[in-house]
Length: 245
Length: 255
Image 1 (cartoon, each protein chain N blue to C red):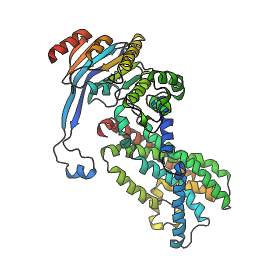
Image 2: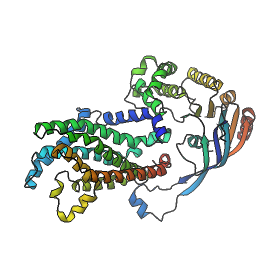
Image 3: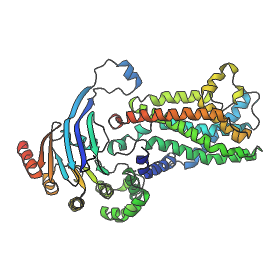
Image 4: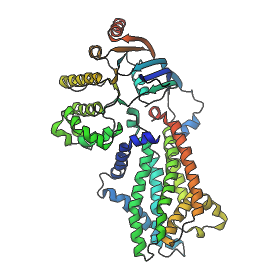
């Protein structure tokens, strides 16, 4: 029987990155330097077992380079595990880097279409959401100017507005809420709370621990590629802070 | 796979559009270049070759156009498309989408360009006095065969190019060689008998001869040959897709 209660399930998953000192990219280099040092394998994630239930909001915390973002990338299938399996149930959208697929010469409105298409939406679905997206981004009349004329804050606002309106079941967010001004940040968190209420699964990587405590129920502390602690958000964040101090 | 592609059909549509419009963006003639370019090539051969070859075909310009336009589709797909994964590295690292979309949109945009340039072929056929025949109805069959073959080849070349960047240049060389081993500038009966096996092994011989049959000679294309080429193309596509799927897992890390 199929177990449908989870949104993401990770079983015995490890991920190695090849560490090249001098990456051979051309045929000549491959042939001439064939006996050069083999690339070192670096194990970024070691034997991760994890189950995220539907409707859970989970924070991934840990110091830089501990493997949080890699874990998110594995969940979205941008990269693939070296061993082990990752199962995903439901439509998944990731906000790893905002504005992927934005084309600087096209207007904000056209880019909404491009970007939403990258997320797998059809034209009809985008048409339906267009007004919500524009309204959320607060770009007003700028929506019809080319994106290259935008300030970085406007760019982020547009990108976030598209991604948040995709209507996915699972939302992966990587440290991008530090965008925009105070007002827009608050709005983003309000939107995330709203999505949480709707029963969406949210996995968020963040260093702003206060907002994480506020939003999430569960936190996973990743340390040197392993799960150090997994549980109630307040406890895990407090333990993490104690360790860091 | 098909389900995933269907879900992402909007992305496929926009990237085909981007491919067609974006290529000559900023130039004065814009999209028109995709048609002017092959016609200029035809002009070069039409001027040079009658000097080299003593007895060229009647209506040589039309003869050339019928061969060169589908060949342009092939070169833009393979030579131009091999780098499609590498060139889209930025977006591949950032979001998930079915990576097949990139090669598929390259071959599809080439198909649309070719379909539009078929108007040019028809204009030339009519004005040179050759005229149209009912055999033009076989066009879709040949188009499908060429599409399948090119997509299979592009699956292989674009995914290998991520790991070995030389692929682009090596493939360009083979595409150039293949041009002369395909009856585009000449008709296949002019090819030296001793080496006719080269032409027979080349799947594009049957494809180009197919186009020639329906547009130029106004006869039934050699269906038996086309059938074999079709089988071959399907096999290439299956192998290509398998290779692509295998290599795809490393795209985000290697580009």
